[in-house]
Image (cartoon, rainbow, N blue to C red):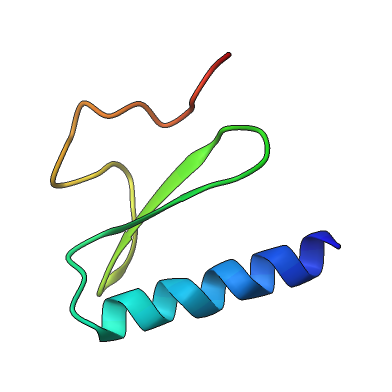
Length: 57
């Protein structure tokens, strides 16, 4: 179920950030990537600014 997947990913995102991860990247089933740091969602990765926001097949 997509809700469980989303909830689990959000849970893990918070765990990684609490463990002092600098950034967390989440990729959904469509290949869209969202980037987060301790302050919230980012427009792009601050660590790898040229990384694409979508993975295409």
